Length: 328
Image 1: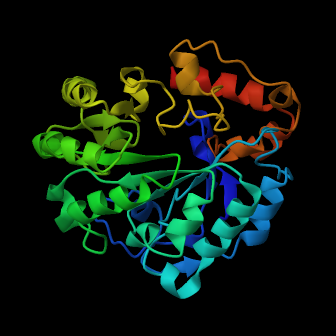
Image 2: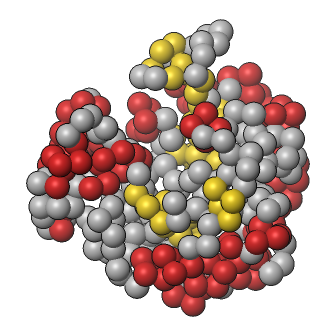
């Protein structure tokens, strides 16, 4: 891990992921990462040199399609501010590099260290957007190793004056949390949160009220759309931005760039992806994306036999077009 571009490349405007840890001690019972691997055993990833190379413009075979300063998306498979950070300081060392270079990044966390020193001061000197995961106090019992919902509101209040913006990451959303979430929106606004980005819970086994979507069980579109429109209405009354991270419902958001930073100068993502193509945004591939040999990042998307050899001869543009046909 460290810095890499994975399967989210077909869906996300900010698909280049940074992780300073493998595993997570928050022990959230619903975490998608625990469905893929054992995350209880936390390992530090000393990736400072990797980060330095990337921010200086040196790309790997998996990131060579991108020739601009695309923001790093930090915290894809682990929390950079989890308790283990107090021991290993991997996140602290990377923050120092990002402060020095002023390279843009989005960091997702629910760890209390994000609002404590020396991290808070370092973040204030970085080019950063902070997403704090918070859905509802009802989920506190499923997040036993993490700060409570109330504590995360307090964290946001400390962090929001220090960074570009703080986004409340309402993921995973469950319909039974709707009213408590709506009730909490004024508290989010008072804490300086700029807006929310929302996505429904995915399950590996069928649950009441869910339907099959690919390899997961999820709430049906009509259920989510009804709830999201109601939540969006309350957000707009309060002056909170609203984004929808549900791939099938992205158009409900203020933009299809659901991380909540696409309008910030210097935070240019990659709009040439399957979601944008489906929504008819008119996004086009860059010249670099059209070059042969820029499709290696698709190996995690297309895992059929022979794919590694096939993508050697392909461009990022060709593989995204092929992926979009299947996505649509």
